Amino acid sequence: SLAREGFEIEAGVESDCAPLNRMLLPLLEFEGLRWMRDPTRGGLASSLVEFSQASGFGVVLYEENLPIRDGVKFVCEMVGYDPLYLANEGKAVIVVSSGDAESLLKVLKN
Image (tube, rainbow, N blue to C red; front, side, top):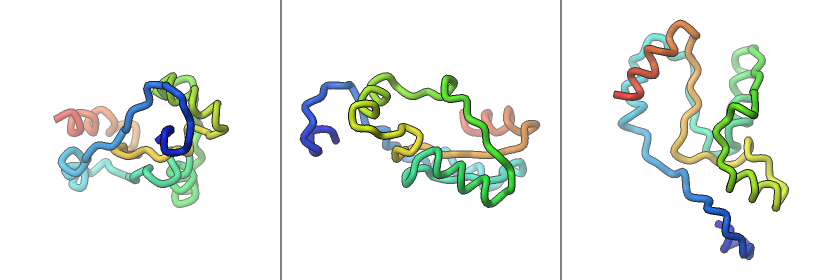
């Protein structure tokens, strides 16, 4: 937390910790699932580097399309962190073929 590190900043940053087991368990039987990781350690960027190395595919991110909260951006700029490398507890990085994306989203939303 910011307070723990000695920063007196009010940025409205909240924990993103959330249990995922019930939501992700049905994906283990989803035929279109190609790859899935927990980005808690190393953030989204590290997870995508791991995917790229394992699969041989490149990854292109359009940062303007990523849902990074303004408070998180502000704090990262203040302390020199890249938000793409921050721990993301309660999140999952999931790769499916493009034809399976809609079906996977339906499973997740259920």
